[in-house]
Length: 186
Image 1 (cartoon, rainbow, N blue to C red):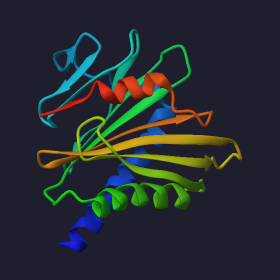
Image 2 (image 1 turned 120 degrees about the vertical axis):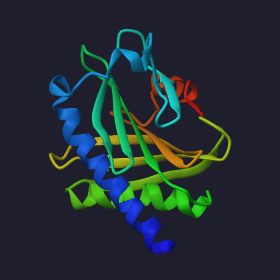
Image 3 (image 1 turned 120 degrees about the horizontal axis):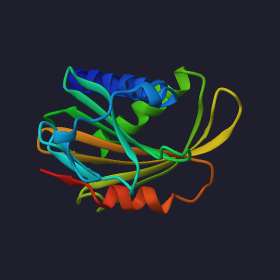
């Protein structure tokens, strides 16, 4: 079971790196189909998640259901912030240790890609649902720029969901907090 969990964590981290690459090419990423949108709300019945993007933001589908992973991004078309939503199928006991393993796996993959990661916060959260976890990292991009990564990890029915945002300042962007609070797992 531990080996399977480690494989899933590594795969989850690989997916995250693909999101970073895709985020740089947002304009060419496929838009989420209209039948998955209710106004600004993404409703993914396959993953069992819905989340509301800020007004006038665009939803893109970064990777379509590859080995149980689905990756979406909501981005401001006039620049600025973008938020990632990553879903992976996982049937496991949801513990603090498993949640830590997920976020540590993401950090290790970033480091392997030339990022410097300094974990600052890992704490329990009731957002987006009870028994979730919030994390904050100080990161240095490969080009030397300093940023902060904010994220939440939650466990729904047979899936793990993460919400992430990279921002310039140490304060979690209010838009991101509202975005995560709007999420429903079903």
